[in-house]
Length: 106
Image 1 (tube, helix red, strand yellow):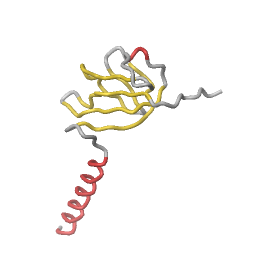
Image 2: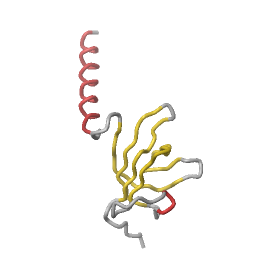
Image 3: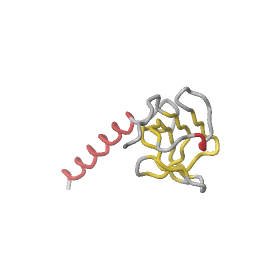
Image 4: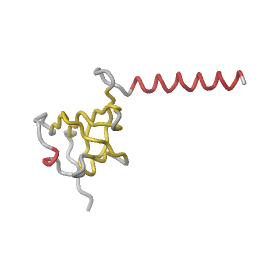
């Protein structure tokens, strides 16, 4: 039983260390990179295989750093994003296009 507790404690500490590498400077915000493939009328977006809610004060930046709307993004697009866990689930706060342009598959 004591060994099980030690393993659980070690696993928790490892996960805690890993999660600190995935955070940015603002408290509570997490970040990642992925392919934005869908934006729904219900206020959700899909990055990779995960759906996120869109925050009311979301910042969306094009590859030049200019503010744009979600409708201006040409999907699919590789993005850097920041999100927070809330009562609504994972809520996107920032989306920024990567500078590289996605080449279409033939």
